[in-house]
Image (cartoon, rainbow over all chains, first blue to last red):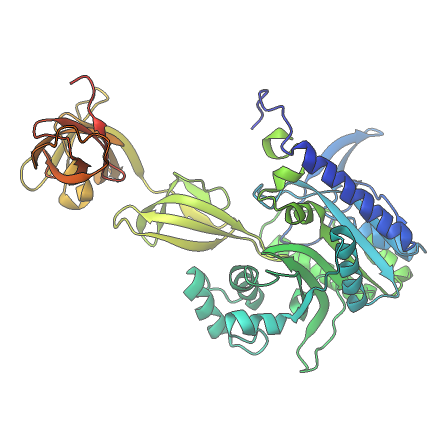
Length: 324
Length: 191
């Protein structure tokens, strides 16, 4: 991939100035609200358990010992360790890394804005996200809010909680030729969501999707909805076909967190994926006590693309892709 | 047999799908916010020519198709098969049936070079060069002086193909044709 001829930046100067201005405004926004800036390490001795995110790592020798450092995929674990240690509401604006395909909306290195608000639930955090976007755009933005079930019923004509496995398989197959042999409901739901729902929502104003199936809770609290469906207090923020942010009313229960982590590690092993050190220091921190809080991670480069109508993520980064 | 991971497939790779050899035209990564990633792959069935999109889990593996592209010169047809000979010095010959030749039949000219796609050693498809020079065998008489007006008329070429040509073209002229669009490009030069 390397070529000595490829020395120029991938973003033009106007895009770099805009980037700097947005960074400045983000920092100002949190300074005004008394949210403390932190910068946790990019290189960590432990990593995430998520079976669907691949992690970059780095080897070195320290005191005569081989050591593996994992590049952070998000500062989530480290920031929660800070909260458990008594930090107030905190934010971080920095680089994260994922061993993913490079594409129009993906890079292996990108900028993430992540913040945690003590005493907030996910509804309050969504409102604060609208405030941030309003500040950046200089006009009042109120995102649409749709539950996962509402979005599904509107665009797939299925209820994600009550539809039979056969109905999900048939619908999935009809649109993608995938799915007749897939027995995992979540895999079918995720594919249908990505293919049929994502392109339709948040076309005008951004859209929050909330009340995810509990089986897709990740690090969110479980919270049954009014119909009694097993849902989680997780939300995602979509705008013009792009996933911009993922947030939770945070799980604070150490025992449940440990179960989820172990079951994800077991799933990784089952699928023959490479072993990595899951960072159980998060569990230790939760045992100490994570205060009630809501947190969200936002892809800043994607937001910059949308704010400037750029088609490719490379156009908002100084050096991206083969230029990095 | 060699295989490809769906996440590594690139345009031009040849893979087996549902028992048929297919060419990969495009590969789009579909990554839900959390959860399983997929690859949406645009394929051309090399037997039927059908183009369609298919979704696979990322990392799933597909067998490579034993498909090879070779440059071959068109020799003649015996009425059933169209005979080609390798231009790599091996003089290897292959007879392609009408199915394999498909629409390329209207661009078949002796001694012209074609790309023959061999599947398990037998011709599966014949691709013409992008541009080919063919003689006009039939058209209305040329209209003198009408070079700028942009009017057109049909002309039959030596292979039987019919293309739209400018009004000033006459029988016996050799024309340069874009085989991908079937459109007239210019009069052939140097002939």
